[in-house]
Amino acid sequence: MMTQDVWEVIWLSLQVTTVSVLIGMLLGIPTGTFLGLYTFRGKRLVVALIYTCMGLPPVLVGVVVYMLLSRYGPLGALGLLFTPEAMIIAQIVLVTPILAGLTMSAVQAKERAYWETAKSLGASPVQMMLTIVKEARGGIWSGVAAAYGRAISEVGAVMLVGGNIEHHTRVMTTAIILETRTGNFTAGLQLGLVLLAISFLFNSFLMAGVLNQMRNGRR
Image (cartoon, rainbow, N blue to C red; front, side, top):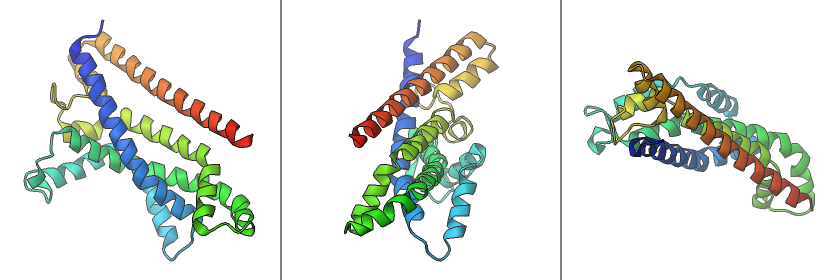
């Protein structure tokens, strides 16, 4: 039976992950769409940076965010270190490049097939962009699923900037480490199974929604 403390850890994990992925979507999807549709000077460098950041080591992100939010850092006055907000910031840094990169790939895959067709039908640039994004939604939602999986399973960065403080910043991944270190392997495995179940349910609902939209779009 799950105690109130366990439910508290699960709820905080869901809050931090969901908020960070939503903000990452607001930043990453428009960026990826723009990069997938338009060519400009320096684009190769920007794309290379995004692909590099898709594999950012979480511990490195944690250290950088820690330094920014620490007492003597440039954002220290905000007092965000060792708070859920600091964990959200770290996860945004991790998931935004994933969303941007996978959105860009999905849009580029559809751009050639639909851009000329939409243009020939007299669509405006905004209408053409929305059409291509709509057709690329399967790949974009796959990016959202990948970002959510990365965020909810993250431990290195959230441990550094959150501190794994009981009743304040303890999430499932940091709780699993704590239980394992104290020799409570059963509790650690149970939390791990809950983590897997949440990821499975999220991906199942997401893919079901995408398939339903694609079927409706073909009618």
